[in-house]
Image 1: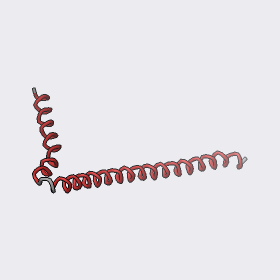
Image 2 (image 1 turned 45 degrees about the vertical axis):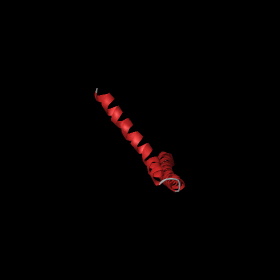
Image 3 (image 1 turned 90 degrees about the horizontal axis):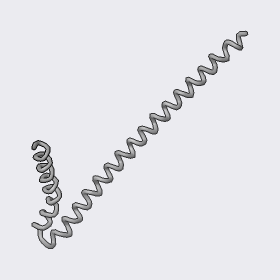
Image 4 (image 1 turned 120 degrees about the horizontal axis):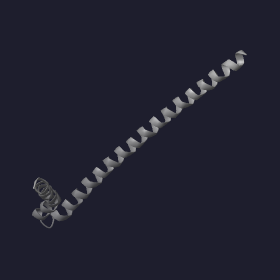
Length: 91
């Protein structure tokens, strides 16, 4: 009789242990995914800086002004686009 009463308790304990292990594995997977996303962002930033430096070095021999205008062009275009969007939204 005692065996019959202990069996559901043992099964429930096993289920709780499995749930605890599953939650821990999911947490580790999430942390791993966040770490990979952070690494991808860092490498993307490094690639952008490298590309910018390469373009600047290649254009500097031609004309320093051309190199600076090429580097600031996308920023200038984006700020103008933001200005146009803000005017369009407020109108």
